[in-house]
Image 1 (cartoon, rainbow, N blue to C red):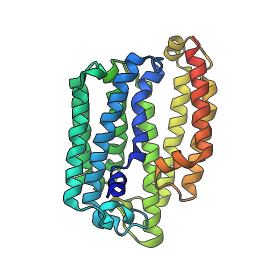
Image 2: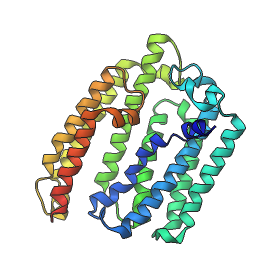
Image 3: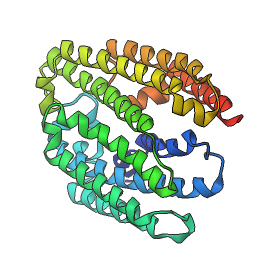
Length: 295
């Protein structure tokens, strides 16, 4: 019984919540404990909130998941966990999520604001599970908004003001990953006639390829403009941030290659398994850190 519970909570997806730490990283506060504690608490809060949403999603999608070549193995779809047990797990996750915020040891700067963001995230994703994911384009924009909310939560918990650059880049990157993931659903529908999502019939492969290429180009241009913008170079006292663009470009091209080979079903699995992208992320992190933290 323990393994199905772990599967439905999807802890491997918690890697998405690392976006919460981005405000600290870009503000030069990543090594300060006073900022790390509230950020870590926010990370835990989002992990449980997201797991609660995964429970609800699996409950509502059980019938559709049984038709999917991979999703049919999910605990609810396979019958390993009943729907009533799934609802119980969902409530426990939501309760744990809000309970973490109330603990004073984390020293969260704005617990009420953080609770409001988490609450909005949960409500938005419930709406997504019930209705929004069945509306083409809106479904993907909802996913991207969820990443921006993670960013906002990290800023609220630590009282770090977010720049328009970081918000814009996170939103665009989330759109890129979400469209790449939906492309896999469109591929399955065109090749096998299996409608794993209602929106898949509205996403043709040529359309998805065009959109993914367009967003990837915008992400790259946006990042380059960020690295050379006067306010950023003045804040970090360096003109060398543009050097890190090579790793962003390499990672985007590699992801496009994977997507073109019809392996884009799960961005999380790709990020956790693909060595090339992992090396790019590590190289970007090291180079960016060396450039901004030396001043």
